[in-house]
Image (cartoon, rainbow, N blue to C red):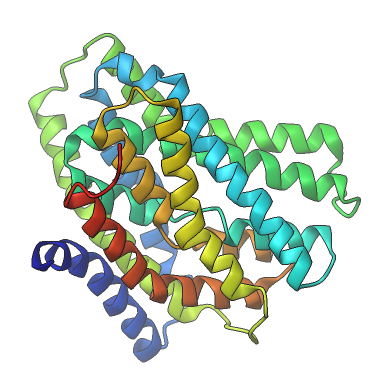
Length: 316
C-alpha cells in the first residue's frame, strides 16, 4: 500500500498545493493564461510527440482497443445523461453537460502523467489512443447535441466545421499525429531536439496538476444538486468498470493496455467541462461543484484503482 500512496501522493499533493495557492493568492483566473498556453501548446504536445514517436506504429493502429475504450466513454455518457434526466431538470443542454461530468475524465492534464508513472512508458500507446479518441468523441457529440437542441445558432454546417477544427487542430492530437508519422518512418530525433523535448515533457505533469488545483479553487462553486453524487458514482466507479468489461470482452490485449484503459477511465471529471458549461451558458456553477467534489473524492477512488492495478488484482 505504501508503494501506491507514494505513487499517488505527488499527483494529488500538487493538485492540493495548486488549490491552496488559488485560495490564498487571490490572483484572478486570467493569471493562469500563460501557464495554460504553455501546457496546451508546448509542454504536453512535446510529451505526446516524444512518447508516440518512440512507439511502434502497429501499436497505434489497434482499432479494437479504440472501439472498446471509446464505446466505454460513450456508454458512460449515455448512462450519465439518463441519470441526470431522472434526478434533475429535463433539459437537453443541461443534460449534455451533466453527461460530461459522468463520462469525460481528466485524461489530458492528469491522466498522462499518472498512468505513465503507474505503468511505465509501455503504456504510452494506449494512453495516447484513449486521450485522442475521447477528445474526438466529446468534441463531436457535444456540439452536435447542442445544435440539435435548437438553441445553437451555428447550424449544422457550422457545427460540422467546428467539430473538424476542434478535433484535428487540437495541439495534443496534432502532436500525436506528427509523432505517429515520425514513428512510421522511424525518424531519429536529433540529440539537441531530444534533450529539449525531455526538458519540456518533464515539466508537463507538475505544471498541469498545479493548474488543475488552481482552476478548481477559482471556479465559482454553486449549490448542490441531487444528481451530482450519482454522476460522480458513474464517473469514478461505473466508467472504469465499463472500460474493463469492454476491453476484456474484446480481448487480445496485453495487461498494460487493460490497466491503462481502467486508470484513464477512473480519473475525475475534466476541468474543461467547466469551460464547456461556460461556452454554452449552461450548468456552470453546478459543473464547478461536481468537478471540485469529484477531484476530492478521486483521491480515494483512484488510489484504490491504482492499488488493484499495481497488485495485479484486475482480472485480465
